[in-house]
Length: 186
Image (cartoon, rainbow, N blue to C red; front, side, top):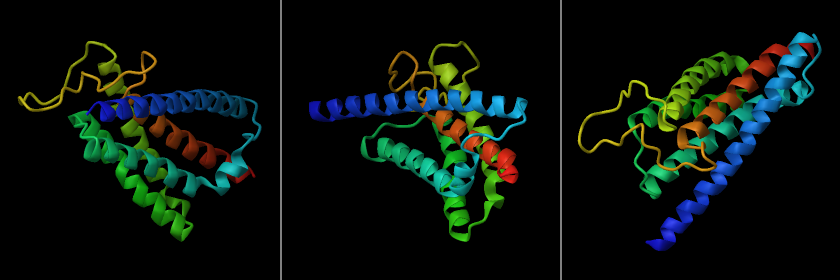
């Protein structure tokens, strides 16, 4: 049992660290994106992102899905209601990107953007709820339900499971927006 707790703690740390790095990359990406839009120049990596948008989307969503399933099914970390709602907007994208990659069809990008925006909003609300903002808590009141406001873990003072979802959905949003905005100029 102690070995499992140590493994989960180590896994939490490395996932939180990679999420933190991902968040830093997203902030830098946003700065370059706005700079490119306002300077009316091309985004530095637009052609690379455009060429690999479908495999990147598939990779991002698959890793998110597999990690969430690993935690809930193998490590027995029970997800709360808001976690389930975030999964509802992440899991279908795995299949959307897989099929689109197979067919080489980018027409799924607007659908991914719509799903990611809703997932991002739910994840952001959930993250704010978990780090202590006093808001309406729409969680189940049944005695065996997991409380959405109680984080499973917090690393670095703010990285939680919902924050990981925020970074994942943020990456998908930026990927789709960057490719949609700058791919035609290449």
